[in-house]
Amino acid sequence: MRFRILAMIQIQGKIDRDVYVACSGGVDSMAVVDFLMKNHRVKLLFFDHGTDTSKNALDFIRERYEPSISLAGMVLEVNTIQRLKNKSESWEEYWREQRYSWFHSFGEVIITCHHLDDCMETWLFTSLHGEGKIIPYRNQNVIRPFRLNRKQVFVDWCRNKNVPWIEDSSNEDTRYMRNFIRHEIMPKTQYVNPGFAKVIAKKVKENV
Image 1 (cartoon, helix red, strand yellow):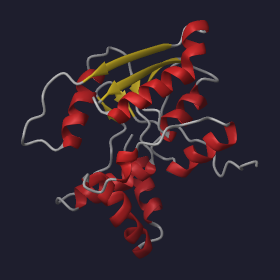
Image 2 (image 1 turned 90 degrees about the horizontal axis):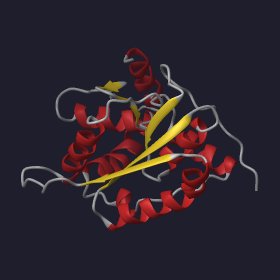
Image 3 (image 1 turned 30 degrees about the horizontal axis):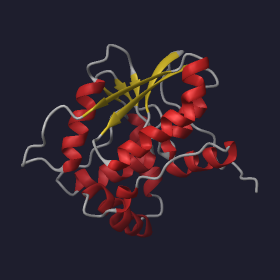
């Protein structure tokens, strides 16, 4: 079966020829890595959250890119949890702090694969806490140049290009607030305002 790419992948800002990409093995990062490898020398960063899901994802990434690492000199760097979780932290806060602490230790620019759906979810989450915020284009040395793309664009890319990805089963667990917003609140928000994605895309374009 052939799939049609519904939209081209959009980029905000400039991406250097040599680039680090935070790769989780999910559809977003696998699409971005495949997209960039055609014109860039990609170095992969994987953060191991210390879970079975992370172990499976790392095994998947190593198997997928082993020929490139061995023959083409692709780099895969891995790091993991460096401290115990504080009782006051949610798991989401804890994992994010640990990831970004590592990312910020690099002198080079690092790309994360946030997309428009992530921005929509974040705006909803922060709005419910008092002030809607957009995921910024830059956080120190970390940039998010793919924020204008809907997640479906990455799914279509991988299907058309036969790029495999791994599903994180924890993404369905609505005990995590991000997942609750994604699965419970987002569909209702888009029912109330079918143009919600365009509203957030406008804000994303203003935030570079």
